[in-house]
Length: 328
Ligand code: UDP
Image (cartoon, rainbow, N blue to C red):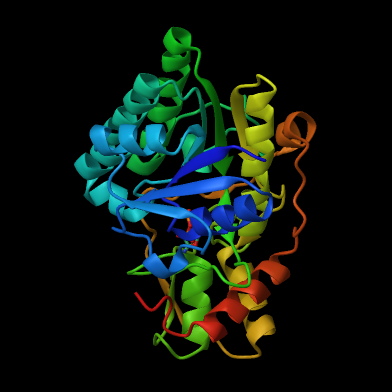
């Protein structure tokens, strides 16, 4: 019998696919989600659901105690680069301050292991590509800054409380499982927007900047299948059990430009994606491509779905099954 895991933000995009994998792997799962971004129908059968915020110490302590929680996987956060530049205060209070309340509740109940959903955004404009964990961390947007601060909080907390902590720095999550996919409202991510434009659900896609120093002038990102991200969380739980703490990149090591993504999406759908060139979006680095060799060697993790086409195909299949997203 595998132990019980508290998954904060388990009703969100990466959270729901990870919960699905945890259940398949035999873990007991309790989801804590305030449904500010998550969806009730993204919560699988077979897990417990506590509706609430990670900053509600009393509620979190009760959920940890009552369910004999062994470890926490912490997804719940605000996660939009553009929005973080407009609403910095909300980002620091949700992603940092409320996160600290979660750690206090863990400390009070003796829960000593956490997997934290961090981001490639901690690097800012990287000095070298591919980016390894030892690259300079100098975020160029508030979202990335909140993730870096919380990684540091974890590190300092562990000095005092022997907290085992693994921070997973995701590059660009993409794709879907059969049942769980990407449904942000409003949507701001490239792949779902491209597919919605292909399906005629939005008039066009705006390419945010064509004057970057990249071969086609558009930003380059490293897209990683959400199912592979889910696997990495299971690997991280095992590593925590083996006494490991650390910071790991999760990407494919390959970069695709915004125009590459649009081309693939047109090929997968067989449809034309209306687009226009727009201004740069604040806070966007030109190029983010990961080296994930540390996760491969220390967590024993390798992506099983490294092809961008497969990710877009999975996302397209999900969109066809859920044309209006989740029902709630
Ligand atoms: N992007 C774009 N048009 C859109 C949405 C995104 O050109 O409507 C670009 C964005 O500027 C970035 C890349 O696509 O270079 C990926 O953006 P996304 O928001 O999907 O993920 P992020 O990199 O912000 O985590």
